Length: 266
View 1 (cartoon, rainbow, N blue to C red):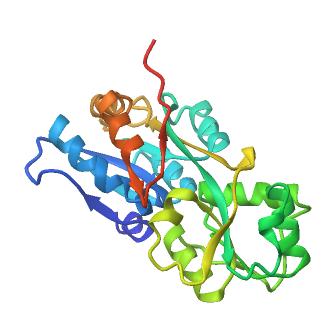
View 2: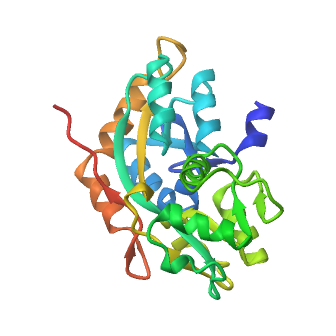
């Protein structure tokens, strides 16, 4: 248990005397967006369910699911999620909502990223100018997408200007703000980030930056202590009209952070 707690932050939500408790591993981007603070009290009210979040990167979230340390997972790396399901660690994958990734950097934009034709071109310009770039370096969904984009741009950098921080989205954004560096962020974390400094959003809109979040119940056949019934109740809520209202209605400065896209059963 100590090892798990050093890898994430347990956040209790809902009523202290809730009849049932469910553990869910979620990405740091989901937590940093502020959406958890909107959804969890409503879940507690509607389901009498205390959802405890373990906030980690997608890679670690999936490993917690494999170990049976959580009852469900909410992450954003489809290839890794499908491998998790195919290996029998989860019962199924249910898409819930999406947003997009954006490239953020200093307002002076020394690599002229704002004029890039696509995401690969944006990263090629950063590499060509040896401009500082901060990578999460933590096996998260964001980190996995960043590495895929670098491969499209010619290869993952091995240079002094490429800084891997091994941290969550908020900490990585703080590092980028301190260094005046470029960084790939999910839009929701960027909009909710309070220490922007000289950073600004410079590039978005490439279809490869699409960012889907999915819910994966952990397989009770692998871990008989997993609360499959509560995970099913939570899934029903997360795909409900009430969840859609809250997710689509969550905005910062008039900008929507997530779009609900869960499909009904059947």
